[in-house]
Amino acid sequence: MFTGIIESTAKVEAIVESGSNVDFKFSSSISKELKIDQSVAHDGVCLTVVEKNDSSHVVTAIQETLVRSNLGKLKVGDRVNLERAMSGHARFDGHIVQGHVDAVGICESIIDNNGSWDFRFSFDEAHINLLVDKGSVTINGVSLTVVNPVNNTFGVSIIPYTYEHTSFGKLKVGDQINLEFDIIGKYVAKMMKAYLVKS
Image (cartoon, rainbow, N blue to C red):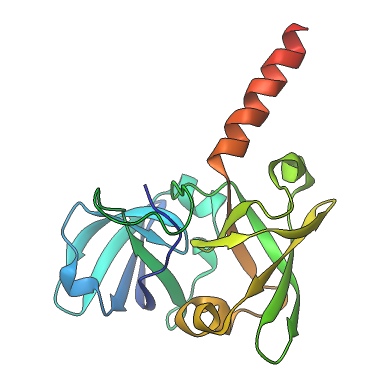
């Protein structure tokens, strides 16, 4: 389990295809602290460390992961957000994040407010019932507050610290992003659907 509070960014050093899988090699300030078989969220996607040294680590993305996320669009030199799984004694600063991408969204606009940034995203309308104003959403692994959801679009406001210490500072209009909706909302939506079917 994760909380959506980013620890570091990582640079893509190599991308190697192996059958339908892809091995990604990342360099980061926390790579040396990772362990083989450890779960780490990369842009919000929970992946297992399969190799490591003092400056880099390798994870494998299977076909299902590549289809459901934006990882297949990564290029050497790109940066992603990293978060290790939450430890039992840590503070719960974000919200419950599983590292399981629900949908890929598109960055539609970026407004610089001279102190903060407003980003707006679109996504598949099949998920519109999972967002509420001032609720939680995860974008590329970052826990954020939903602003003004309208139809299949919503906004988030980014403070300078988040802009500078995550990949938000590199995000451009038209870029694909990984979305994970709030797990509580997903459970409620599923239970309501089952209830309405029975009614």
